Length: 268
Image (cartoon, rainbow, N blue to C red):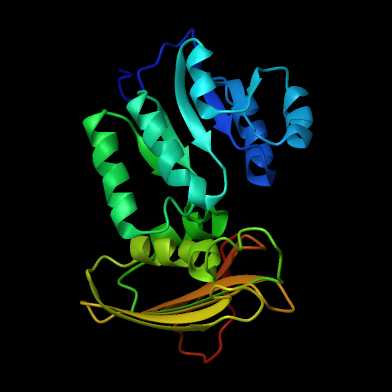
């Protein structure tokens, strides 16, 4: 069994990518740029995509279990369609590999809890690709945040066939829900949600109102049937409003002042 993140300075951690779509292909430069990691193999079932994967000069397999042929494999990045996540994560954890799985980790809470238990049993790291937490705007907010009272977020996108195997809540809204839960230091009190099917058989546009025990309220809107693309969030606290634009990767802070509508502070 692999010990969590056991490392040898002279030997980079060998990783495999499972599913070589757009997200995985964007992940490759991050692996190649970090000397602590080495791309050891790729799993991809589609022959036309295998052609692209083979240009990286590493073994390309059709099935996850074939990765057992790869010596000293430490972890896998799972970027397959959501319905595949649960089974592939289970197989990887049982083989002792650390797992970074794309969001959403699973389609149900019960499945997610089971994977967390399995990771603990096998002493493996299980992480989810909630990358918005590492957006420069979100990182710049951290030292400025103080007891948020109201949060308003909107994540809008034109329709694309990608990721329509899950609702817009698991496809888009999950980014903002994850970030909001990391910003508010309080237990959930209630969630009210409404949505509609527009172009698919699942929910394509939704709004949620999240109430926390400390009094903070978050209003969250997500749509994958919009005419424009927008990823914004406003966080209100005493004497300050923080406006985040995740697409522009900027944070603008408005503070209470003796002069109304004083010039805002541009953080990044």
